[in-house]
Image (cartoon, rainbow, N blue to C red):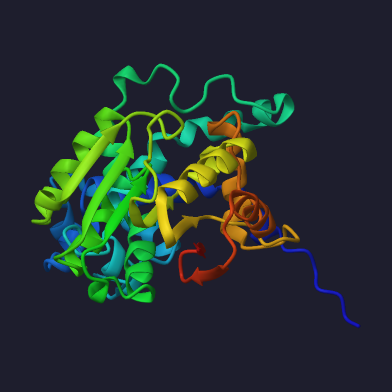
Amino acid sequence: MERTSPSLEDVLYKAVGSWTTGILNAATVHSIFTHIDNGARTSGAIAERAKIAPRGAQAVLDGLLGIGLVTREGDEYRNTAEAEAYLVRDKPGYMGDLVQFFADHMGEWSRLWQVVRDGVPSKAQGDDATGTDWEKVVLSIIPLSQPGAVASAARLDIANAGPISLLDVGGGSGIYSATWLEANPRARATQVDFAEINSIARRYVSSRAVGDRFSTADGSLHDVDFGNDEHDFAVYSHVAHGESPAGNLDAFRKLRTALKPGGTLVIADFILDDDRTAPPFVLMFQCNMLKANRQGGCWRKQDYRSWLDSAGFRDISTELLAPIPLTLIYAV
């Protein structure tokens, strides 16, 4: 069998991954994709529209061509289908704010080797958070949650579920509540999260004209009383990776108590296969959790099954969404 030669180019491209983040961040900050979409196609026209230096415009366009997010024919540039869908401002799938969020934290990755050595970060998310721009953080990650909100609403036929009550634990922006309330005008939702985050969620949910059926409870998920037999559905989206195994088990027990008999818990997160070989993005996200959190991580499907079983859930099924490797778990 012929052996394939090792690819130096492949290693080189991985080694300069931070360049990709920097190029993409510069393009989103200066709305390059949006200007192209609006008809500025040459380097000079883009520089003028974006009010940036001509040399800078040419460099970032070269970079975008190199990473495959624009095409060039003659002197004119076009967005690729991916850039058109996700990087043009004001389009539904816009992820530019998330790109900028990743870029803001790019420097932390140069110190990952220290966290790997010690096993925990010297400073974790939530430490000294008084100066955190929570609105920027919370709203930027909506694109990671929206696919799960839409998919779960469809699978559970929320539109036809009648006068239901939803408990959204750690709901952040309120994207699940907003999506489900839009689908079902007879539904009501309560979000549990910290006060500064709940205030953002109330504004976001109100901006989607369903705020009159949305309420909040301020505090930690471990401190707030979820009630007994009160809710038809509960959501635990992108929360489990920030909790320890004991913390997740405690949360699932509280959620089982809060749900009515036959009520459904929806979990959405980046979840590892049981043999820890996939999905690739989730394997990489594990390093993100190591550098950002002292107790969390990307847990395996079998970990969730064990916690849910111990908490009293019996009917458990999973759904993997694409292209984002987001796993939804439904537990009754």
